[in-house]
Length: 442
Ligand SMILES: *Cc1c(COP(=O)(O)O)cnc(C)c1O
Image 1 (cartoon, rainbow, N blue to C red):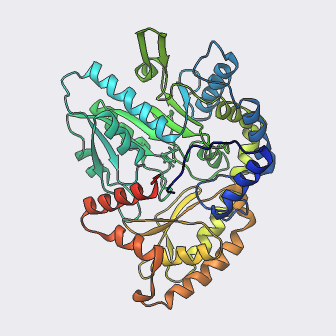
Image 2 (cartoon, rainbow, N blue to C red):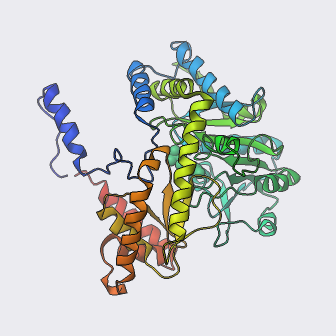
Image 3 (cartoon, rainbow, N blue to C red):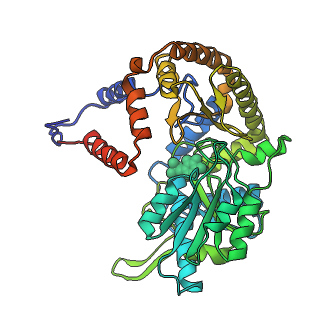
């Protein structure tokens, strides 16, 4: 990447178009439904709706609700539709953000400012989370000056409620449960966890970033899903990503509060700028109109019935995968995932090597650690490929069963090494250096 200078002369559009296309040649191929993360797919009809909404709103700026009242209207409608889906309808309030991380950051910010007002004696506020909760909470805590307190989970990715209760301190101002968690797809016992938080007077958030737009439909289909949303009294805020099971392209999420009074703590207003009164709901200033329009359009296009149909396919695909994987000697699905995310563990085999073998066969399956596992997020379109996936996974597993430890090289070896380092600060340092090199520009 050395020697890059600002271009002197421009390129013709046709050349640029083909350059852009060619640049993708080494990218993960998600078009063939062989990716189990990164891209959520609902079908070409939905993709066309997304593309046309993005194109219609490609230059509009969500910063000013006065300049673009259409974006204000679509954002509030998307928030209201999401609130209705998550049983906060009528009173819940919120905003659209750029993604799960921003939604989570806004909820943590609101809770922090709420605690500053209601419990001014707390000087070092704490955020309580399970090991399986998303690192966006660690990141938000880091940015907002909160200390994180991490509660471990069992091998089945479950919380010990007594241990969770003991982890509260007089400084706890925020606690979170996932519905469901990203790594293993487990729904935490939200009712019990929220009740403990309420008893302690602590803000409780439900992270439904990945589950928010599928769990309500899975529940409707008759699968056993415990209540996880605003039906539970102690739930103060929720996050739900439209750019996951809402099937919209990246840049779309919803943060919700039980009522407008709580949402107040999310806003930032500066009234003394020479540029005018500056008020924003989220971290971003200028905001792209496209993701708002695309979210609105896909919800209107699919409707409840469309999402329900897609959830049925995703569940069918998941069940075929889970049953098939549990029959492969050496592999097992971790815990009891109730919906469409799950992790695969092994007591005997190197899972990262299995992941590599799958990659050679064109599948993209993420590696996870503590303990090692492979990750599956199942989209409705996977129903087309589950049988082939299981066949390849059986072969890959058999090949890895025949390997000796010293035969395992490449990505699997490196990932395993970093994952098993006892000194986690060393793992952090190595990753920092690695990232610094990765994004080198000169
Ligand atoms: C994806 C995810 C997040 C973070 O969302 P981004 O859109 O990647 O910022 C947070 N929590 C859970 C459970 C998620 O699955």
